[in-house]
Each structure stands twice: as C-alpha cells, then as structure tokens.
Image (cartoon, rainbow, N blue to C red; front, side, top):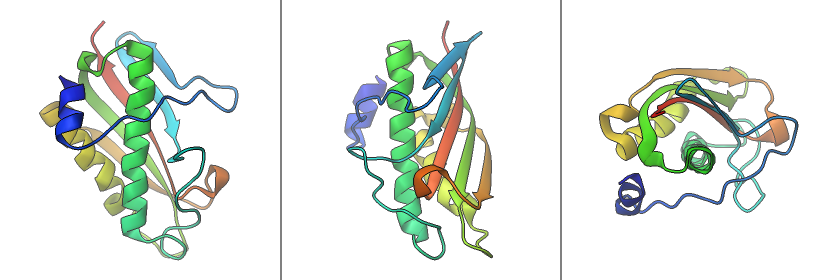
Length: 152
C-alpha cells in the first residue's frame, strides 16, 4: 500500500546504502525503529554542499530534506521488510548546516514533515526538532534521523 502511495506521488525509494562508519542504518527495539542520520547523497554525491543561507538556498535545502526522507524509508524498508508495517512516525530530528544569523531551520525541515504526511497520512504527523549546526559530515547542508513505530 505504501509502495503504491509512493508511485502515486511520483516518488521512488533509492537503493538502501550500507553505513560508511561504525553504526547500523536502522535499529528496531520493542516496536520502535531508530533510523540513523540520513545524508542526501544521490549516486554517492551531494547535490548541494555548504551552509544554508549562503551556499545553499532554502528551496535547495528543502529538496535535500526530501531526499533524506526517501533514503531513510529505504533503509527502514530493508530492515523491516515492508513500509506497510509502519504504525506511526514518532519523531524527526533535522540538522541544517547554517550560516551565522540563519534561523529558518524549521522551514527547511518542514519539507521532510510534509512529505512524511503525504506518504503516511495522519500516521506521518510527528514530533520534531529542527536544529542549526555549524558543520555537518561531508559539508552536507541537511541531515535527518527518525524514530518510527512499527508493527511487531
């Protein structure tokens, strides 16, 4: 059903990517899936790099936030077998590599929140934190992690 919804939205999940360092992409414990921070690489490359507000526009950063969601869902599906097992998106934490004085992190991370609601409906609405960061791995403008309730 979720795969059909993705098709209706014109979206495709990328292939899940193994972790590059000493962590696992997803841990499921007692019905909660903890999805590691997702960096918006496409074919191994970041479409945009740098700080939002100087090197990257808000609109470009919003595009990256959507890529993070799709990558996270891909990793989650690889771990649990089907996104139809998602009961509720619980929490999203978004990090925005920001220039001094930039304070529109919520506007950037809203793109991820909006996409999760489009995909999962009411179950996609979630608690959230949007944080400005001085530096993020690989000079990525956006990184997002997720907590998602899944059927046992």
